[in-house]
Structure formats: C-alpha cells, structure tokens
Length: 144
Image 1: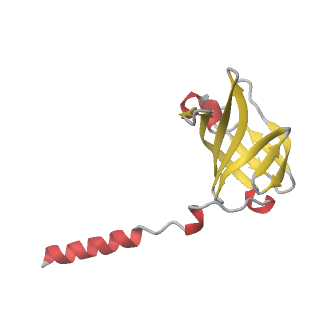
Image 2: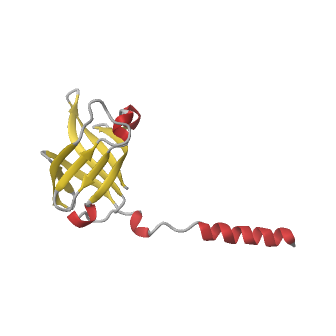
C-alpha cells in the first residue's frame, strides 16, 4: 500500500513539475519591430551548403565571441557588445537595423532572412559564397 501511495504521489509531483511550454514558443510568429526588439545571445551558428548539408560552426567560433550581446532597440538602433570574455581588440558596434517585412531584416548594410522567430529564438540567414559556392550562414540567437 505504501508503495502504491508513494508511486501515485511521485507521479503527481512529477506531472505538476513538468509544465507545458507555452504553445507559441514552438511555432514561428510574424516578426515586428515591437516583438523583435530586445537583447539576444548567440547560441549557434551553422553553414548550409547548396547540397543541403548543414555544418555546425559554433564550436569554431572564438570563445570571446560566443558570449556577446545583440541588442535590437525599438528605435532602430542595433548594438553589438563584446561582453563576458572580451576579445582582443574588443569589438562594440552601433548600427541601424530595419525590419524589411516580417521575413527579412537589415543590420547596417547586411540583409538577413528571418528563418525562425518564435518570440524567444531568432535565426537569421545570410547568403554568402564559400570557395565560389553559394552557401547560407545561419546565426541562431536566444532572447536574454
């Protein structure tokens, strides 16, 4: 009897602790200046080749760059801050960011496609050439 009560209590406790993540955090939402504005951290970077193979670049990103802060201000100002482990030389930038539509953003003169935005996670894609081949660099950010 004690075992059954303990099992039931454990199950009840476990189920109450496993709160469901709000449904809107799983799917993309249209980006707007208001909901995109905020402070983000770099959580991943990858390279997508024309052959549709994705390579994780994050392990190759310098440690001093992995903890930097990306701040999209609602007034259109973008601030990149060298935080945490500071690089030599430290890099701080202030640029203008513009939401082109809910699927693209320009930071300075660079255009990015918004691949994912769910209010917390933001994935920005930049088209580039690597050894003459068309590729995409995907920068993955998480709201702080």
